[in-house]
Image (cartoon, rainbow, N blue to C red; front, side, top):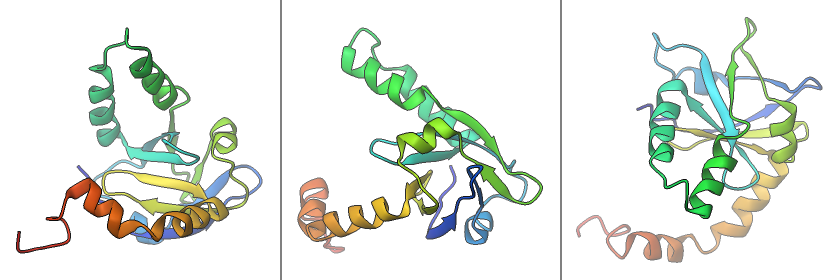
Length: 154
C-alpha cells in the first residue's frame, strides 16, 4: 500500500489536463508504473488510486451484497465512470470530462493526499469544505476515535 502525503494546487488546462505535482511524483515508487484509476469520490471530488490500491478497494466492494439496494448504489456510483489514466510524456494527466463535471471542476484544482489515495477537488470547493468543517475537528475526532485519539498516553 502506498502512503501519500501533502496538498498541492494545480491548474487544469482547457483539455482537462494538469501537471502531476512534483512533490507527489517523488512519493511514487521508483519501479511503479505511472497508470492510475480515477473515480467519483464520496462527495464532490474525484479519487485517484494506484492500480494496486484500486484492486484492493474493488476487492472490498465486490464483497458487498448486490441485492442490498444501498450497497448496489455505492458500488455503482464509485465504480461507474472509473477510468484508467496515465501520465503523458510531459507528466500531465487527463481527467475525463464526465468526471470533471461530477466534481464541478473549473481550472484550479487541489490535489489532496489521503494515505492510500488522492482526492482531486475544485480549488474553491475544497477550501470552502475545509473552512466549513475545520471548526468542529476536535469534536469530530473525539466522536470517531473516542478520547484515546488525542491522548497519546492511553
